[in-house]
Every structure is written in C-alpha cells, then in structure tokens.
Length: 450
Ligand code: GAP
Image 1 (cartoon, rainbow, N blue to C red):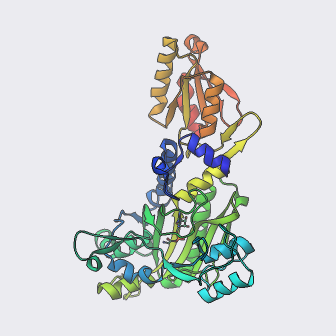
Image 2 (image 1 turned 180 degrees about the vertical axis):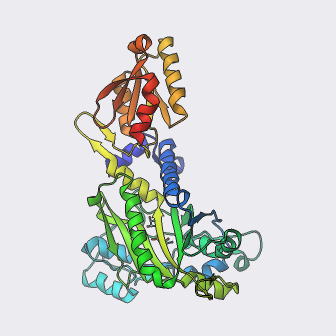
Image 3 (image 1 turned 90 degrees about the horizontal axis):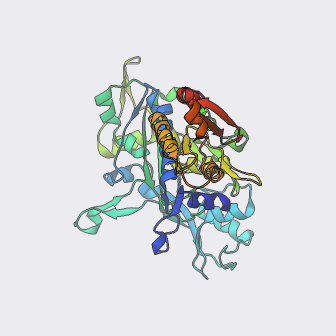
C-alpha cells in the first residue's frame, strides 16, 4: 500500500490536500492523472448503466437540499455510527471498527451500543494510540454534515450536505414521472459528491469525509423484487469484472440483520480484496422496499406513486438500489494494476481506463524533422484518445515513466520513420515492440482498445 500511495503522489494521481498548511486528515486532491482516471470511471459507468439503457434516466441534484428531506428520509435521526473515546488520549474511533480490527472475521456493525461495550470490555481492547484501556461508553454519532444558509437565526437556517445522492432521486421521482412518463420498472441515476462526518478514517482514499457516488434507484413492482435483485447482482458483477479486476479478488457478502441500514431489508456488498486488511466494501446492493417514497409521500403531503394500468390501481413502487463508490473503484483499480519486477514498476490498467491510452515520443528532441513528424502522429491519434507527449531524456526513461502511469502503448518516431513512414509501438505489459505503418496506426490502436 505504501508503494501505491507513493506512486500516486509522485506521478500526479493523488495528493494530500492543503499540504502547504499541513493537510487535513483524509482529504485528498486528485492530480491530473487521478482526475483522468476518475473521469474514465464515471464516463464508462454512465455509458454502461445509463447511456445504453432506455429504462434509466440520469439526473443531477444539489448537494444542499431542503433539510426536510433528511428528516423524512430518516438520516437526521438514524444515520449514525457508534463511537468510543479514549479517556486518556481522546482518540475517537468507531466501536465496530475497533472490535472488528482486533477480533478479525467478525461483523458487529449495527449491534446495540451495550453489546459493543461488552465486547470491548470482555476482550480488553486497548486504545490503538496510547494502548490504555479506558474507554467512554459507546454512543451514537450522526454522520450528516450540517451547515447554515444565509443570515437567519441558526435553527431556521440549518441545512445538511447530502449523505447519499439517493435522496435526490426520491424527491425528484414525481418530476421524472411528470416529465418523462416512464413505465415500471425504471431507474433514476446520478453521479455526485456525498459527505459524511466519518469517525474512523484512513486507508488512503478508502474512507473520506467527501467522496463520490454513482447510484441508481430502480423502481419496481413489489412482487418482482427478488428477480430484480438477482438481475442487478449480475449487472453489477459484469460491470466490476469488466474493469479488468481478477474475479478471485472480488466477492459478494450479505449483511447480517444487525448490520442492515435503517432503510434496507436486504443488502449485499461487493467486496474487493484491498491490500490493507483484506476484503472490504466496494459497492452495495440494497432492497429499500417502499421505505423512501412512502416516507416522502407522508412527510411532504405529495403522493409519490404510480398508476398501474395493468391492474388499474395506484401503487408505491419498491426500490432496488445498486450503489457504487467512484473513489473506492479508483483505489481498487490502482491496487489491482500495480506490478513490479527488478527492472521496473508498471500499472497494468485496462487501456480504456488508463489516464492516457498512448504516448508519442520523437526519438531526439533536437531533430526538428523527428519532432514535426511526431507532432503529426500526435494530432492524428489525439482526436480518438488521450495521448501523452514526452521528448525529455532517453527513451528508456520515457518508457519507465509511462509504465508507472499505466500508458498501454508508447509510440516512437525515429530515423526509420522518416524513410518509410513506420513507427514503433511498445506494449506496456509485455515490453514487446512492433513496427507499424503510420497509415495503419489509428486502426491498430482502435482494435487493441476494443
Ligand atoms: N445510497 C446508499 C448508500 O449510500 P453506502 O453503502 O452508505 O450506501 C455507498 O454507500 C457506497 O459509497 C459504498 O459502497 C462506498 O463505495 C462509498 N462510500 C461510502 N462511504 C464512503 C466514504 N466515507 N468514503 C469513500 N467512499 C464511501
């Protein structure tokens, strides 16, 4: 993990944020390459789940919504984790993380605070910072970030930063019904930031205060929920394995009853085998029943239902929710891609996800005819894919640099190019080089990308 974090910083993927002020724990900035990786993840997700599906409608809703949304959804009261504080050094930690970290292979998320206290006492779990055993009793800590709007008295101006993008889909259900007239089953999707006042942080970008979700609320008839659930499990698996992640580093895990979120009656997580502590949550699939639409109907006074022409009745649709973390996807991709041998380090990222699909090098920087030919090649393929340009140092160093950022193909323009209009294409994973005619290069790369 240390090597991945160091590479991410050194090569412009991910930096500690506000570093000139000493940083802020668990906030990160995505550099140019990290930004490209995130954008590729989002674009491909959108194409896979929204662009090519006529039954899914994409929207963008605000981060700050009417605070009544979060009271009706239950988040203002129930979106909480149990926390304990060390009385000696004041380290605060999530009680479930303390227990699961020490006892391995046990899941205690969602247990009542009294039971968490018992487990901590029975197993004499000491503070990870000062090693003392002197904890406060566990207490619930709400995860929603609060803020204030305008200059009205505090209680009237209270607002929340959204803790999940999902509520944007529920409160705009009627607007989608009225404007798009969808038929069940159908989904509403969005990609956007969510915020949580996490107590336990750490593990690089795995758990942060601010992160990005890609979520779908899929509205169904209640009696079809099990079939829809299974169908979504398949689609999620197709998506994640399509990212080039080995299947044996992925698994499904069903939540225990204690662990279920307050809105869910069945949740299964896709877990990835991260290099810190093994399998951890990557994505989730929840059956939210009619919990959200029913609550918003009751609390807003606006009926959020559906007229079923088949049955000639009105019904409140039930919801299957596939949810995906953008940042955990990026972290998984970096972890799965990292390769090294005694010669070099390379990121074996799926080519379409890599920050650059190709790099173009003139063999020598001080030979104008090579540089100008290389610029032609750059312009020719640059309209189809992201292409890096490098003319510094020797070719070996340039290959090394592109390997480290996962560029699948390096294209060198040399003196033979000037003679016969061919270039070399060097493959990141095999390091093999091939001579290709410039006239064939576009289709050569396109074929490999496809
Ligand atoms: N709408 C359902 C929902 O929000 P969740 O399991 O709490 O469910 C969904 O979050 C996904 O968001 C997770 O599977 C994970 O990928 C990501 N996620 C949640 N909390 C996160 C955090 N603090 N930092 C980074 N990603 C997070």
